[in-house]
Image 1 (tube, rainbow, N blue to C red):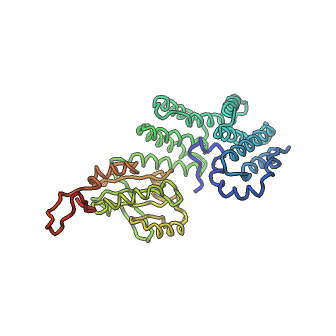
Image 2: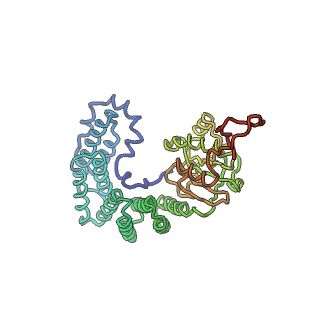
Image 3: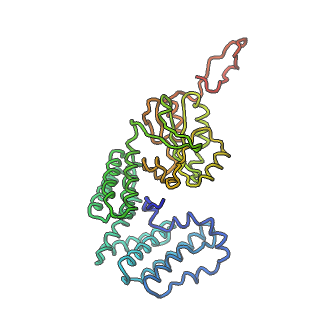
Length: 404
């Protein structure tokens, strides 16, 4: 699924390139070591040629995988990018100038991430300059980056400041272009409110932003606006029922209603998700201790590679139900349930009680144990020792698995 990166503070930098390509580039980088400085020499040329140069240097292989090598590489790429943008100046079309400004701001963001001396001040000075630029399309672009930067720095514990900043974002979006950049800060704002525990405000933000961006003339923006609507639907789940239907990996139809009267964990996960895999031992332990007492788990796989998923399930022998989309065009983040509930990060664990009502959107780790203890009872229930001559006599203190 081609989606806008929803956390702008991370999106407005080269981080995605390094995180996804770092391992693959290390070997190749050793072969090309020594050619980097020449490759980073900024040429003269047209705006199109300089933009092509910027794209090329952003994909240069790393000369090493240690932090010092990565920082040095980022600094060189950032410096070359900024120099190329400065050579472009105000030449070229509006689209080319916008790309150039984006590239320079992204370079500053990445330099800030590696704590390069002066990068923070240079970026803020540049944003201040852009805010007063006479080109009509420039100040709105600067405003997006300025808001994104502040959203990335706000203290979630300072509710007053966060709500004030959220209101500023709302005002900005009333007259802003309904594009991917502004969709990103809309999501970031609602997400911050949610993580700060301001559920009512977050829900209102998701609903309002979804309605606004649904009117965009960009089909990609409209598609992602639907994710905001789904996020609102997800946030409103506590106290309500959750519709969970789909195909199991065995091709069978599944409906969570078939587990009426049981406590159910709905787990959004994927084999490529490290934190999801790290959760599996806890889920196994919970399942083993509570399954016989009315606990079920249904995993919603957001994998796109069915072969990889099948191999993983065969190796790990997960004892619970796993759903996978039967539609090849609706796998991964496009899984119908991920789209319906605006799932944009995993793992996500939703716990449903015996009455079919959602009781938690954060059913993981110790929290899951606590929830199950509340819904079902203690994980270990000890029985009084029986006389030694009893048929089912047990040693004092011994626990019978699954005993009530």
